[in-house]
Each structure stands twice: as C-alpha cells, then as structure tokens.
Amino acid sequence: MIRERQKKISNFREVLTCSKEAAEREKTASEQIFDSLIKCVEESRNQLDGVIEGMQKTTESQARGFIKELEEEVSELRMNISELQQLSHTGDHLQFLQSLPSLNPVPPTKDWTEVTVHSSYEGIVRKAVARLEQTLSKEMKKLHDDVELKRVQQYAVDVTLDPDTAHPNLVLSDDGKQVSGCNKRQNFPETPKRCIYYANVLGKQGFSSGRFYYEVQVNEKTQWDLGVANESINRKEKKPLCPRNGYWTIRLRNGNQYKAVVGPSVRLSLKAEPQKVGVFVDYEEGLVSFYDVGAAALIYSFTGCNFTEKLYPLFSPCFDEGGANSAPLIISSNSSLRLCMAHPLKQSPISPQLLPSLLHHLKGDLLHLLPITDARFKHDHCLRKCESTPT
Image (cartoon, rainbow, N blue to C red; front, top):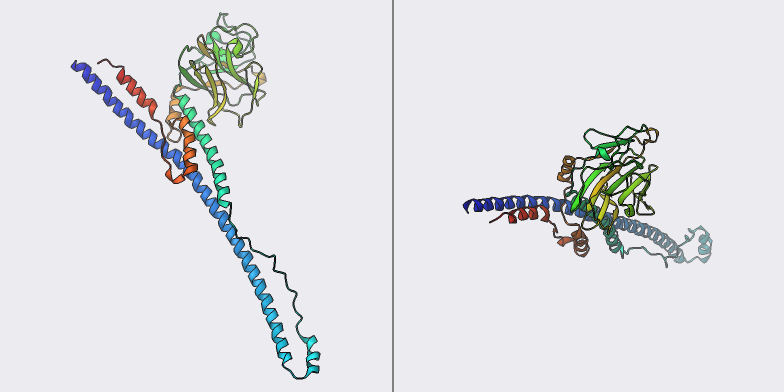
C-alpha cells in the first residue's frame, strides 16, 4: 500500500511539472499571438494618424493660400479707394477728371461665393476600422492555419518505406526515408505486395485506428503522388488512385498542376508551390488532410471517408522523365518534426476553435483583449497517465 501511494505521489508531482511547463508554453504562445495582433492595431493607428495629419496639412495649406490671396485683393482695393478719396477732395473738377486715367486700374477680383476649404474628417475613422478588420481577419487566418498545423503535428509518427512494395523503377535509400525514380527497371523479386503498374511504394507502418501525421519533402520535383492507401489495393493493374479504389491522394503534374484524385480529379489552386507536404489522417473521423508545411496552409481534405481496413502511407516520385524529375521524395524524421514544433516562434497550442473569438474581442474593444489559450494536450496526457495508475 505504501509503494502504491508513493507511486501515486510521484505521478501527481509529474502532473505538477507538466502543468507548469504547459502554462509557460501557453504564456509564451499567448504573448506571441497578441503581440502580432497588437502590432497590426498599432500600424493601423499610425497609418490613420498619418492620413489625418496629411489632410490637416492640406487643409491648412489651402486655407493659408486663400487667406493670402484675399488679403492681397483687400489691400489693392483699399489702395484704390484711398486714391479716389484723395482726388475727391480736390475742388478742381477738371483736374479730377484728368487724373482718373492715371489711377491704378481696379484689379480683377475673384468670386469667392462658392470657394470653401474642405475640413471634414467624417468617415475617416470608420474606414480605417474597416481596413483594420480586414487586416486582422487575414492575420487571424494565418494564426489559425499555424495553430491547426501544430495541432496535427502532435500526431507525428515515424514512417519508413517498405522495399517489398516498391515498383521496379524506384530506388530507395538505405534508411528507407528517400525514394526516387530511375529509367532502368530493376530486378526486384515478385511479391504479392509489390506495386507493378504505378511507380508507387508504401510505408512499412500500417494504421487501423487513431490519428497519424508525417511530412514529405517534395521540392525540385515536377511530378509526385502522396497520400494513403488501403492494404487491399490492387497493386498489379491500372486502377485510378481514387477513394473508390482505396486511395486518398493528391498529385503534382507538369511542375505546377496540383490535383486531388477524388474520382474525376479536382484542380487545386495553390498560392505557392509546396516545398514540404504534411499528411494527416484521423481514422475514426474518416479524414485525410494535406498541408503545405512552409505556408502552414491546408491544401485539401478528404472528409467522410469510411475506413474499414489498415491504411498505409503511399509515395510516388513518378518516373525520372530524363532527369527533369530526378529529385527524391524525402520523408522527414520524427526528430526534425519535434525540433520544428519546439521552436519558440512557432509553438502555439492555442485551440483553433477559439481564435475567431479573438477577432470579435478586438473588433468590440481592442483595449480589453483577454488571453484565450488552450493547454489541454500535455496536461491531459499527464492526468490520464496519473489516472491509469492503480490505487
């Protein structure tokens, strides 16, 4: 009984340690997110100040110009009036008439009735707030995408290539992390698992439950296929790599044509060419998602999938194409994934579902922003470990 209680004490201490670490991570993530949002607000405020000051300077310059012009007209009119008054006091009418031509002519005067100076700032702040809302929405989208990617990266698994499934025109590295196409067909032993028609290779690791995630470097390639496949796929015949045949894949063709192989392929419009693609599967939810890791952006998701058997990661570097497509597909190691997730500027465990509410708070009252963070993952993991210990 003492030993069991001592073990329980040890587990509770571990929970405390995990909780403190999670709290520090959350505070760091919260500071980074709110610093980013506050920076947007401050930049918008500075831009608005600049616009208002510019308008004020324009108004001031215009008004001063009008004042100077009017003062000059008044001065000339007074001068003419003064000369006329002096002549009017003379008793010699003939001299008066003879002197009139020598007087300065009355200068042409401007009709100032409709001349005004624009000094209204009405609507300036409202427009600035509307622009700020658009900026914040874009920033929230970036933050949401980054948080979502970090969420799925929590389920990273170690994937290696299965040489027994490799097409004869594929070359695998010794560590099972790279695959490239070659023009020469290799003399591989025929096995039921080997892919013959398509230049595919499967991962050694299969999954029949839960969630898993892995990343593949695809840069410098003009063609590739990535995704997951059922264990029972037909590996010997020409069958489209679509869900109907047990495949959930996306592909690149001709260097810039991205498609999701749904049945008839769906063209994907990407803002940039992915250098590294992340693949995430939630078996129970029937979800397969693909991410542009560098941009932290979702590429495409297969939803509502009905998985009934073991799934295997699928890779196709496609054929060499005379050297134009010779670069390999490279599976990222788990250690590099952990290093990426641990980076202080990227780590952000805030729940994606909570991020939209941040924008609501910002729009309502930017001075009353409150941190909304989620430290559940590691803390709950510690609690489950503690609760699983017998008493």
